[in-house]
Amino acid sequence: MYKILIIEDEEFLRKLYLDAFNVKGYRAEVAENGEVGLNKLNEFKPDLVILDLKMPVMDGYEFLKIAKNEPSLKKFPVILLTNSPEIREIGKCLSIGAIGYLEKTGSPSDIVKKVETVFKAFISISENSSGQSARSYSFQSSG
Image 1 (cartoon, one colour):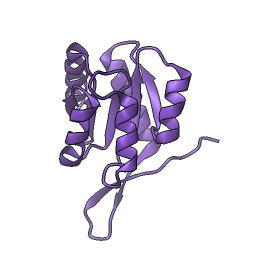
Image 2: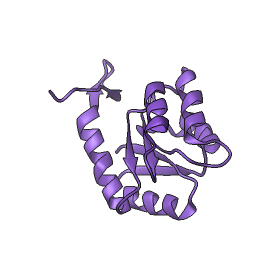
Image 3: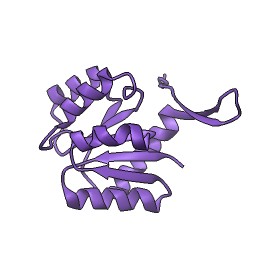
Image 4: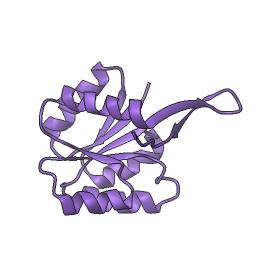
């Protein structure tokens, strides 16, 4: 079961995304801003972080800068979530370490389907030498 941390400032959307992921069998948790999200990363250890860009207290860009410069946090893959993709903002975040972005268009179940595609394309589960399941992140080009 994959674990997803959703960092989104709009309470209504947090609830919708949380319910949509949980219904599909994911273990999802939410945070209302980047600061709360940073605090949850080490404790929850998600397989994927879905990060809103525009938030009060700590926005997505600041969250990503801190997370990707902290050795214990930089291993968590991050997908940006935005209402209106601003190429400059997304480009900055991708250069820091985000693996992609999703637009908030469509229903929460559409977001779940897009995330499932990401898991199928980019995240594989491997066995480590002790026989325990370990998640490894590999990025494969399609061509």
